[in-house]
Image 1 (spheres, rainbow, N blue to C red):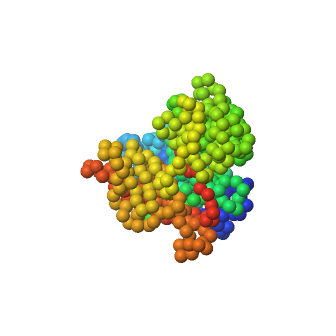
Image 2: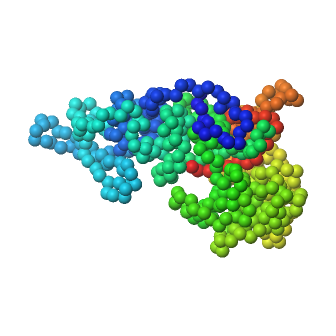
Image 3: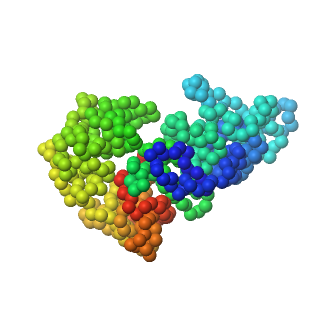
Length: 498
């Protein structure tokens, strides 16, 4: 069993079940992991690193030279092109083949300089064959072979990890403390940004009855070592998600972010879409925690995140991006100034609808600068857009909106999935171009009155609009992801790339 708790959440009072379970003894080195995991890691790494990685151990070298690695690279679609030349050398009776090896850069300084390449004779680690001549780099007398993969420089390990799916990080974090620290480091995020290998993470914020502060969880889809995938919600921070997700909003080519953790802060961050480093935007007038924001007409509106009985005039504020100044919004009044965490903001016909877990929702009109109460959205009816189509999930159906006919139609192919009645919480989000559906149910349905726990379930549905105009869905996986007390409160969900 994998121990996700790389860092202990400071605000947690009771440890979750997955944290109490005793993991298997940690392997002594990366090479102690099963071959299938090492092969999947190697398949995601550029072949230019193979000559260096082959020095780690004989096991590593044999895996790099194996046909299984070629098959794995084909499966992951990470095959690379190699340039060959055939030469007739005067001191050899038969022609000799050579392949071009472009050496990887190990530091930023080397990256700025001109790359270096060399021709290595076949067979080599880059091009395995059946000849008997060893490549030049193998003939060189290297330093004493390192005892493990961890003896390589951190920059090489980071570049390798950046090319591996984050779904393997909980397993890889068991290798050693130094490996775990690299997985949790901000440098790894920078490396993933540089190599354009960022992945989407789905996170939810829950208020649990035995904890004073909200808790964040991230969906971990276990790597596909078997045909049927399985997912689970792991608490943040962990080896899969090292920190709480940022609340992101895009304005043109800039991305603005709000932190969603304690203590409250006035800081807003900003970065260019092609830059990994954040800088400070103009500070908010009020310190907030877990606020929400939206963008309308080039302005950023921020709501909540502070107590309802303080800073009434600044419960909401708006940032004029061009003027770089904040302006407080009118006070919505005691009834509409929510003290709980706001779930989301919906923009409809130029008005801002603030959705919460309280009895009433509110709507703000920027033109008239006035607040009004508005009916709450129907319970169990969650909508989101995937592609250019709106989808809605209800208790026993999944629907899509046909703009041409101006009506909701049923998604075909989900009859078996819809047999399971979904009551209570239903949340739908666009996850990697697919429909992610989340709902809860009693952990023990037979004990409806006395059941003290609920199970949060998730399903991932791939969608396809066919030539006849119908939308078909296919459930890729569906299972329970977390057991929580029945009195828990769902606060918010988020999907970001990291």
